[in-house]
Amino acid sequence: MSLLDHLSAKLSAIAAQSLTRTLRRADDGTAPRQNINGRPLLMFCSNDYLGLAAEPAIAEALAEGARTWGGGSGASPLVSGHSAAHEAVTDMLARWYAPHIPQARTIGFCTGYMANLAVVTTLGDEHTEIFSEQLNHASLIDAARLAKAKVTRFPHADLTALRAALTASTARVKLIVTDAVFSMDGDLAPLPALLALADEFDAWLVVDDAHGFGVLGERGRGTLEHFGLHSERLILVGTLGKAAGLAGAFVAAHATIVEYLLQSARNFIFSTASPPAIEHALLTSFALIEGPLGTARRANLVARQTQLRDGLLALIDQHPRLGWQLTDSSTPIQPLIVGGNAEVMALAAALEAAGLRVPGIRPPTVAAGTARLRITLCGTHTATDVDALLTALERAAATQEQAA
Ligand code: PMP
Image 1 (tube, helix red, strand yellow):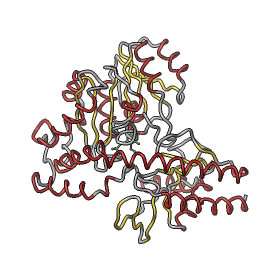
Image 2: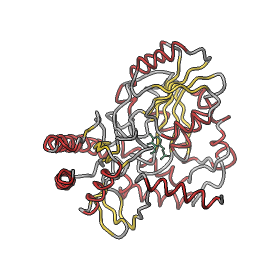
Image 3: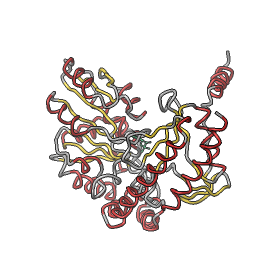
């Protein structure tokens, strides 16, 4: 069979399960309002949780950074790609996490995927056992597959199962790996309890705070600040393409861990450093996150979350036959679990026809039978925006109920 025939058969199988993905082209605008494939849409799908990507101060800082530093960094960090702008970012983040991680130091990466890959593959050597949360992000799952460590998965938020696995382990080094905010459910990992287990079993806790950074905690420093955690066992991954409104990622951990990543993480050593202009603009982003604008956007997010959840619960009450459900989320990720793949895509299409973009999420991203609308809120959504979504969902629910 030729490769093309082989792939065509696989593509047909994907289509037969209603799992084909399509690219949408944004013509202009920034979340939550963009022209997509030529149509203006109100979006509930961006991870730009504070709306910073659209802030004029960020665009200005990027331009200023480009005037100072030009375009790309030109080399990997250890060759010549590491600039004063990169260092200012990692220094600032080390200060942010000093109250949470003794002797905190940070190291930068171009994406969160890369940061997760670096931490888990570099620390997960043959002497290590990785205890991986069932609902972890794909990048952590891929990283665990690549690591030389033994990998044990534990069921979602199941501390009893994790305790049993830790008790049974004979590994020299134990690494518990978890998302802080689960990206498709929006719920929070029980980090204080996980840290207590890490203490008890002499394990280390890798926390992927992709969806908590900027959003949670009084000053937006994420889940460590939200829970008030403090331990040298914490290894934090933060991403900067979501609430920070730019791009990139960092690992904050005890200085020895960070030094080891710098010496050994292959995707740090052998990959071009991020453009310095982005790093320069990140300093503006951090100031916005911890300043009055960040505080106001976080307060608006909480108000819109309550409005949305109240509206969705009323909708579910009115249409019990549809079997829709919410998750236990107190974050801007507010999924509406619909069930079937075809149903969720029909719902997403009905919303899009009404001028709203909310993506349907299907297996394998989520478990079979739990296809969902992944509604994400942005700090710049208004009460009117959320009302528009609820009204369109109400109409779509009535239509689906009639068809059922
Ligand atoms: N971790 C989680 C939980 C994520 O949701 C994502 C991105 N969707 C990543 C890591 C990867 O981050 P990045 O997009 O910066 O590669």
